[in-house]
Image (cartoon, rainbow, N blue to C red; front, side, top):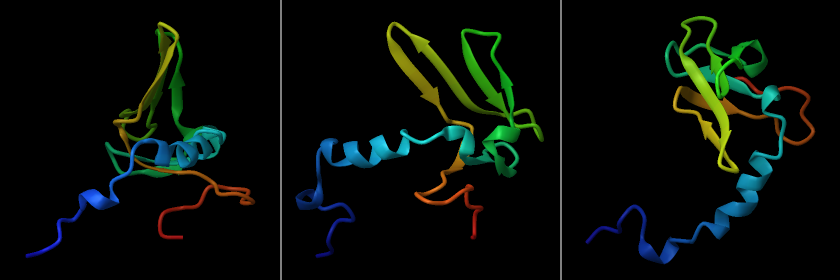
Length: 103
């Protein structure tokens, strides 16, 4: 009998992810590198186009105009939709720039 890929005895509740997730979103996302899910182009988030004339922010790829990120607030809640982001790379502690895929 084979072991299931995610055995129940290794399962944790969401509190196990709270610390790492807090670190992730405590960084400046404008320093991130993003890979567009539309065209697979990888570039600094700062080089994407931002549209702020709607109820939130929409960030689009300059290469294919695909929406890579949506941010809004409503009812006291923040919403971050990254459906159009294939990969988000954040600079680690002590690094001055975001790493590129494969580096």
